[in-house]
Length: 195
Length: 356
Ligand SMILES: [Zn+2]
Ligand SMILES: [Zn+2]
Image (cartoon, rainbow over all chains, first blue to last red; front, top):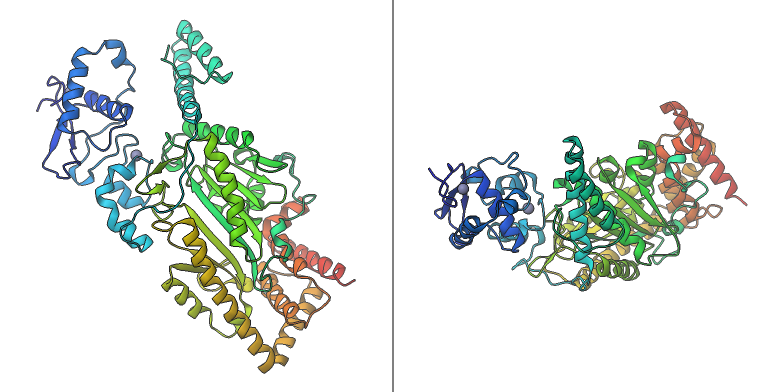
């Protein structure tokens, strides 16, 4: 079967639209598109799994995308098809419903959205409350704090890239990466494009 | 103790919360309020790569240094500490056993008084706790809430409108708040009523467990009462329920102590005074034995059967006699027999100096 996103490569990954909250709405995509979809959902702070609409948007983006932007995406690595009984899957940390049920621990904050449809009975039981909704305090807005975290995330990515560049003896790239790292470490916290 | 980098745990006095001076200190050792928090944008510790954990540690410690926590704090990198040093922090209630035994980048920051402690990269990125002497949930909460509010300003915290503060374990989500009250229940234990307390507390969504030892057998008759639910209640609701339930346990324990003292006076005096005599003369003491006898001495002090030992001394011995404190104080690796001998020596020393 061909990937329903790029409609070129063979599809190896099945994802389902859990907004529709039904296993019937499933998409088959290739590993490359899956990475792009995850990234897209994350960058656009989209909830949950891809919907038909998201797939459409990603397809358009892909056809208009410069190759450079695509190259920025993380390498395919150990992405494997997710069996249907493990769905839904967190696009950010890869936690599956099956794994969460087994471990009893979430992988990231996003999981609360991803598994929302399955959480209420569990939370009702644990906390003996219906509906299981928060009633306490909240964090105060933190101007500038997000920028710091973004810079920090960028830093750890850059350090990885630097290691790879040095290993490949690509010293020109390594020098540029090092400059950016120094800049970030000096407290210039504006996250920017990767060199 | 070079690994503890500027923190000499013997020059350093034990936590102020051990003073035995707070409200209801006849039964309550301490009240701890803990808040679980995570930094937005990173996977929870259990799913984060070593690189991400290092980044979270750096971010959190950077934030902790930018907010004014206390006059002076101590920050330790747990990766650089040996096993015994980490165990010492566990025995002092500064870190959890889980954090001590974990791997990868992780740390702790605590105040000189050892009331404030902040673990980084435990199950959640941040575990903030404040311990007060005696039963004092309001003030412990107010203190840790201040720290939390200060951190909010410099760190983006994972939060959702629906579920509140998002935590790795669904049992902590919502307020992320756990109040744990450490209580000494020798009379309820002697008269076999502890099981009833366990059940009653459980019905009211609170858990009681032995502080040391396994299952229902609690060495030293020390127990911990904590709220179970963190979601669907405000922080004030949780405080109110703890303040409704714990005093009932305290009253129950006091009533049983009173009963023991009026109806079984001779028995209690005998148990307390024998325990003290044994501690003052033993040449070898296991940790269980030490805690068991200290428990009886503590009861004896409360019933005024024993007047030449302070609550403070007993509370401190509970910690100083723990294996890693002994080990570290001696410097050398001790065999179990040597450790028992050293423990007996320590206890004799402390109880003798308390005489004057
Ligand atoms: Zn594709
Ligand atoms: Zn996740």
